[in-house]
Image (cartoon, rainbow, N blue to C red; front, side, top):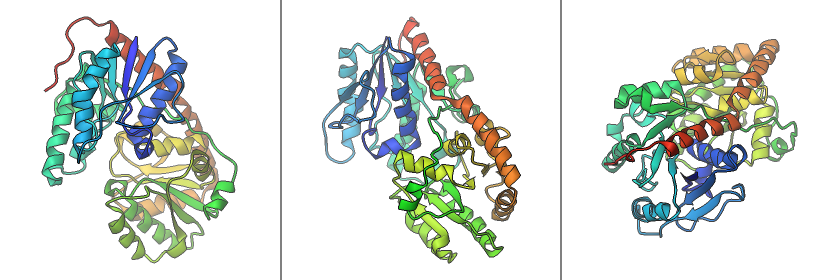
Length: 386
């Protein structure tokens, strides 16, 4: 079988997004579970081959650079189909459904296709109608293309429920494959010292995006500081964001000074060290299709306070304390009680480590492989895309 996977942006910043981590982990893991499968990663025009990509995976930059937002459209709609045909690809996987037109759309190809819809957060949490018209049109069009794939993959039963309810796709056309993680503790405190991070601290892992709820997280933390909490709050956020100015202004208004530390762009060892030495992970997101950080904390034996969301409960089970993410007072109370109870933290840490082992990357890659093989052997016409 010859398998194609869209790898757009994985040699750049997109690698560090949730969708980028999903695609890159899949590309890293497939050669180990399916050495007989020929995998081709289709990149954007001029993208250099990333160092992390296994030697067994072919790297194909496709298309040419064009003005404005035309590069991605030309690459996936005009340049990719003949390249996929020439490579004799049997199954092509689009691991993301982007909502911005400068990212690639799901292509229309003469082979079997898989599309991953991670969630419907642009529709279920954000009001899609408030976005610029071009984004609304592109996202709806791109969703239709994903729904026309031979198989739709999503990452949780909660997301499958949203897709069936919100888009009317029959559940038997959706395969749930939970994300796999590759994350281990790092006892070395050197990275923390280099970034000026002192213990004790609580880790917030999210972004400036409003649904990640940084404002309420800091407000809850500020209430605990007033009660004498000795910890810092270390917030892992992106280096640049259109939402950063508003979030930072809200943060400044709380006058927490050095008690809040913002970090970004950490290498893998530093990131693992940051998780390992936290007293707790605070994950108060308002909407999730899966949620990597609680599992990453669990794999390091770190206790978690997380939003009471269906997807997060599905992933973490009994290995977290759940709280209403719209109630800063309840969030502060839950976090404060956990920090004051080292036995409970150890118990949750042990449960988290056991939970994380259920989400191995080889298991996730093998489940994807089963989808690919089933499609490759299926006879009949390929899906038609609007």
